[in-house]
Length: 104
Image 1: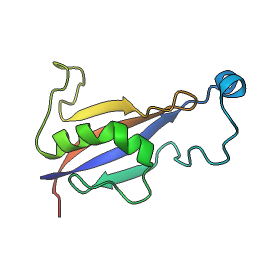
Image 2: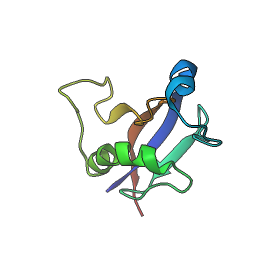
Image 3: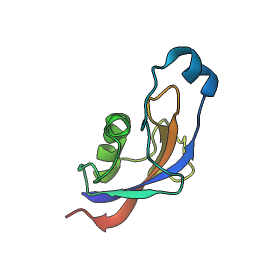
């Protein structure tokens, strides 16, 4: 089983939707663009958002076990995936990349 690098690529913020529909939340997302986490195989990295993990974990599992070429050639690097968390107010885009390093 391989390690998987998870990089925070972009954070969006839809103020109009937040103002209209969301109850105030103090710390909805503390992730920063450029932040990097490494999943040790199937294990969620320390400090990683639980909600984002729910979305990404099936792809992390697949990549860590050698899965590749999701959706018939969607990514230039077949051992990667670009995904977003499920927050409709402030979605975060993540790049997942299988590493050559074995999980512990």
